[in-house]
Length: 111
Image 1 (spheres, helix red, strand yellow):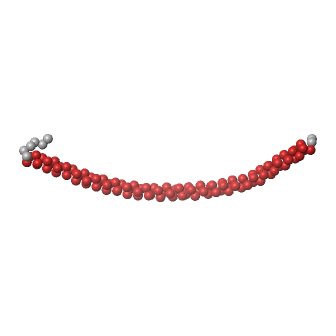
Image 2 (spheres, rainbow, N blue to C red):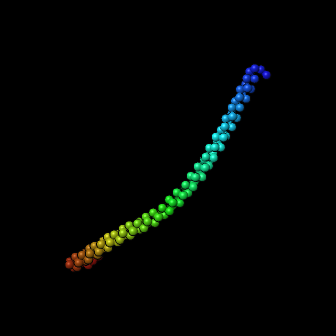
Image 3 (tube, helix red, strand yellow):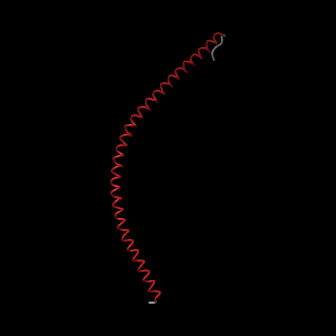
């Protein structure tokens, strides 16, 4: 084996050793990180579950109240519309009667 091949072989072995050492320590860091993530995730999921349950209960209560308020507003609006329609109906009846009275005053037959 030539001197050049020997140096290349040593360099490759050192590179492989560095990669293995890095992988070894990276494995420990990853294991610790995964454990921390697992613990955090479990806690976060429990908090999220509790928050979600509470939020859903609050939303349910708000929704019931909101629906009642909306229903009341719709009923009020429908009452106002009905009142306006009654006024318009009365106005149309009066206009029709005035037209009939006008025609009768001039001895004409309504169309």
